[in-house]
Image (cartoon, rainbow over all chains, first blue to last red; front, top):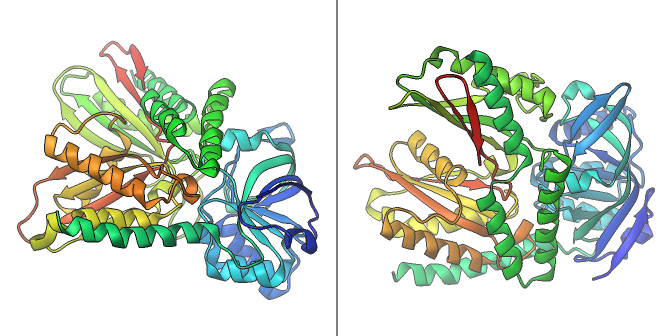
Length: 200
Length: 288
């Protein structure tokens, strides 16, 4: 386990050095995207349409923030992660076609994302679920917002962050998926518990 | 009166999304003190820091300010009964702007967000008529992450009690890190399906953490299940350690002889709730 400070754009060789359990503090640009945004990103990619934001070397954040508008500027009040599992449907293709290097969320992702991470050089890291005010402290500025027609939680919020973290790497490029490993262990444990439960 | 009910509801929503109830906070502090896994401890520390910061800055502790649900007890003789529904719906609209809340009410076919946390069956309002002349309601803003892994099992009645523990443990395993553990797990046993889910949800979201089940046998079962789940080692945010649940709360309803529903409902650590009591004259107080 080690702690690193990274700034976007991220380089493939840097993220490939990271291993599960490592801690990252991220500075630079991170783009929020949830279900509807991912769906549209994939539609655009398949149609060959340019995305409104360049994700090459970039970071995506599974997050639908609480925001307020003050004059022309938006302010992020709360911005914790949403459950990443739902984005498993889209993320492998997004990683493959955009050159995305970092995905931040919570709850873990599945084998297809893990495979895309190791193949194309990206990592998945988690931020504490629900720690949304704390997360918002790292947001320096809302650089822009795209696809607001999807609604506030689903829009692409382009955020400039400073030392956003600690982000715990749980999928690395070496093929490890830490949360899946924890759940597998729990499954084994349940098998042995079941034996004792049925005796009761 | 309509205005007083609306103001009480807006204040209850505001308090609920910003301030975690003391019983939940206490349970999290205890979990932090007990936890030995470094990664899990760091996560719990972030949770506790976040709770404090939310209070200090008066901001919603979690960006998912949830689906707004009201559990309402209307006194038979409460003079403002006719205003309650509209005032509660309005309060969701007003609070969305004033707190603010994230708009979370989406048409399931058109996928359009109404933008103000209102819509068909939204906010949700559950009614009870009770003796007395006051109005009492508890607002629960529940996040989507808590809702997503909900499990309903129709188990063979002949095996009901035998498999109950297994069913709960398997549901917890399947939920994994999704509902933001440490969670409070609500288990609803018996009834018809909607009752099973309803009482499970109330057990998870309304009952105070640290309270004992009034049925001594269920109190024992709750403790056993809490220990068994925590032995699974899923841990805070699925990162391991000994804190997967803060509590297991069980409720039951009489069932049909041929059915045995078991509902398992998850409440994330941000177990938000606030209760408003509105007197017949319009004065109100908010309790957490």
